[in-house]
Length: 175
Image (cartoon, rainbow, N blue to C red; front, side):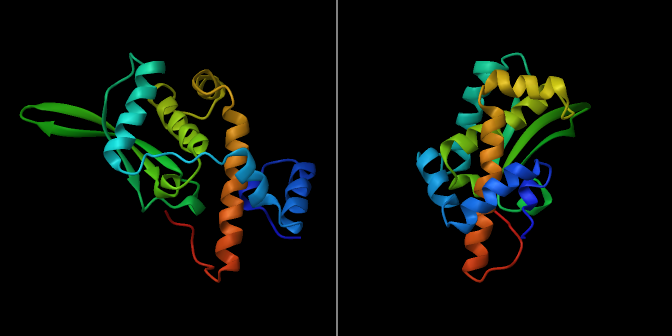
């Protein structure tokens, strides 16, 4: 029985259902049927605009964003699908803080719903640092289907890994 690393914390009965889909060769088909819509956000400028629109809609009073980029160095295997950072720099005699969001490059080609989910996740960190109840309440406020999308994203990552292993690329999962 193969381990499902992206689903390790989920109950065995869910993992068994996923294994059955994998054994039938249907996981990719099920995901494609449910999440066939791609997005057109191809570059960092478009990504910044997309994130800013979501921020303006849900978190108007949150700190401004200085930078939003796709990052090819984020390692999905190390559970970093996106990051948020506060960078402080000395500017003249003052300390200036800038917030950055980096999204793993795998989302450049992922379905639109998964990009929205990861952006919502990173935006929620502007208000809530920890992955606690308040954090997930904010995520579901911004994206009501957040938890289903997070689960299905894990299925998507599992499918990407299966395809990569079948193609003979057993290396790490980078963006």
